[in-house]
Image 1 (cartoon, rainbow, N blue to C red):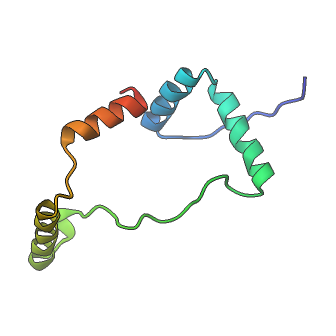
Image 2: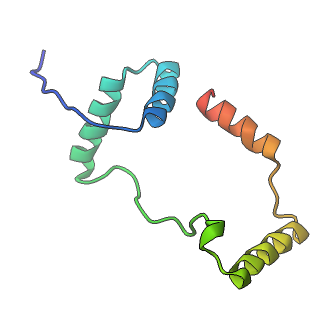
Length: 101
């Protein structure tokens, strides 16, 4: 058996909980998942997935001027008019399905 080293990392409790739920369903211990991630970094010679900034960020109401707020509302109404909607129920079902929450 190969020698091993310890890694100590701080993560948000909710992220850890969600990851544990998924890993349990896959039958993979957390330590094995971390080892797989590190091996992929070595094989790929970098992070094994694309990393980029989100195209848009959530808008905080308190940070908006009245004109900016009205523009955001108009965008939302426009999306509704074009049928660009997702029901809260479908979002909840996807979260439940994907994360078992």
